[in-house]
Length: 95
Image: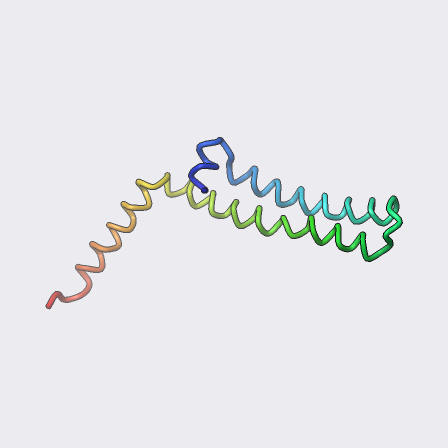
């Protein structure tokens, strides 16, 4: 999924921005719902919480994207795993 987002041109900065934007949208939804709807405080709270739950998802995907950007895709990841295996072989005695 992260690789697909990267191919679509989405960067970690965009995802972090979306996370902060969802925090602002959560506050705006809470204020607007409280003032414009007749549902009262409970309904406004539900709208604010619903939109506010998006922020952690955007931040988590942004962090995964940042790692993808640093590793340089699948090739870098497999090279790193192979390198770790080679280092482990040298550190442990073979029976």
